[in-house]
Length: 458
Image 1: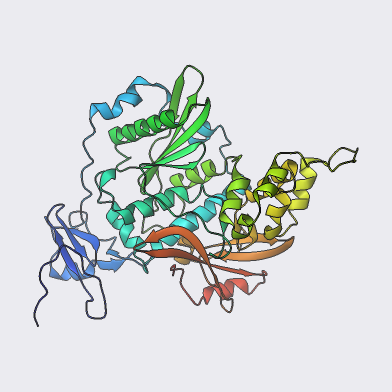
Image 2: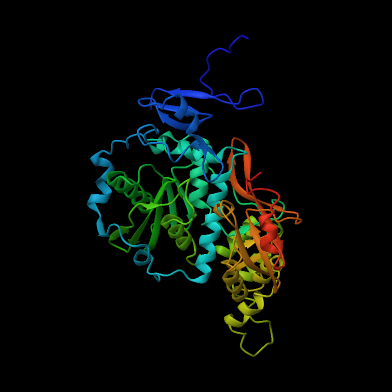
């Protein structure tokens, strides 16, 4: 058999190629099937070599957790941070470094029930990335750890990082592509995920100088883009860690504060998907967004059929009270209670009626919605066993006032799943998330235990 000529392009596994070994002399790393495994400076002996080829808790091929540290690959050194990269950080007024998130956002120490739902859904989305083998996201995350500078991210690596940082800030409306479509990611140095929140991709945030350099980049981006006084937030994101920056501008001064580098990505060998970074970004994403209703209209196909005239008549407040009606309009709280009983497909037409209705609809749209079901609680006592719980979750939900139980990230036995679209493309393939809904019964847990398909996205 004639061997193929040398190539700079990594081959892919197929029915003829089961194992691919790669020697990375730049980083002194031995890769197996595209995943970093061993240090070239201290390879295990022949017997241990085979024993250390294992799988992590998410099902990815990986170096066994019991492999001694001297044999495991080493993370590259952080990039050199010049003093000029820290100029903004050192010359600006810092009111607090390594600030607790609740102090930075001026919120309660404890999660509200609504925040808990947002956190749980973000954990599922991150778990779906880590468990994905179909388009190689899990493998891609392992290789992101080897990037020493944010400018060295490949397009696929940048897409994975930006998706994980951004997904909690998009309107939490997930459905089949025919019903909702989030804008695809466009590579930029700074991504404004909301009018007051900007994200930048970074590396080595657990190194103090790298953290301060990323904070400087975010402050500069905010100062260049935003002229109006107010509070703005920045997120430095490396996949493995994140940090939140708060910038307060007034007419004459600017001051900032920031958190420490918070662990974002769960360990691939973890037993719980929760991390401080996931909680931090979910809580930041839950802050009131004045533009939420308009953003939901943009991603929902049926909303795009509404005319500009409809939008203008509704949200300018001119039609809050019909002509010739002298009594006062009903209070916002009552319209919110009415909106809670509407099907999701009716929320946008409802919000287009008037400014008051738009505000009531926006309050409902702060809840995550999957395929028209509003996620309202984490049902206690209805749990998914490991390892499925790392990338899937059960929620109590409501649709048009009717209670239901939904599962995100997993297919329930005898229940046809729906594929939720996400704005992540890797190598031209999209990440899809399985979704199933059912009325709760005592048989639900046994159905989950006899699942048909593990929660790999397809």
